[in-house]
Image (cartoon, rainbow, N blue to C red; front, side):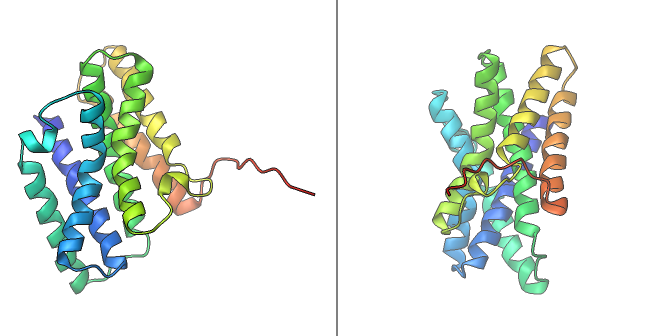
Length: 204
């Protein structure tokens, strides 16, 4: 039950990031809800399609859509009262990434997929919604931005979750540790500019 609530928190946080992105592009309320929705369900939907899980999670449980809509509208109401900090979108995205990566990895692990597939499914679940959000709002996806610790954070968290689970550490500790590592790495990248080395070929 705890992990179910973590899923709901994940879609709410990603919905907030989608609503903030829509607000920066001055979309109307329908546009805000649409961007929030595709951000929040894009990764999980891709995961379920690839794993042939039917019905897709938000079709089976409309509570997800209700949470997304509420989170988006509350975000609109809040930012009219107090403008969000400049880095709020990236922080919300970091939290959503952590929740969804571990959610995807956990589902793949329960299906007894190979370890590499568990990690890949976790990363896909975490990043696809943000990629769709950024494409629809004409931004470079965060996963492709110069030197960002994005996919690296997702891979590290998913691998740590899987490693702890395979060692027999009781639930929900592996999930919580994996999420904490993802958030820590993303916040380090946001606050302190932590980056991966960039490969560059200088033409002379």
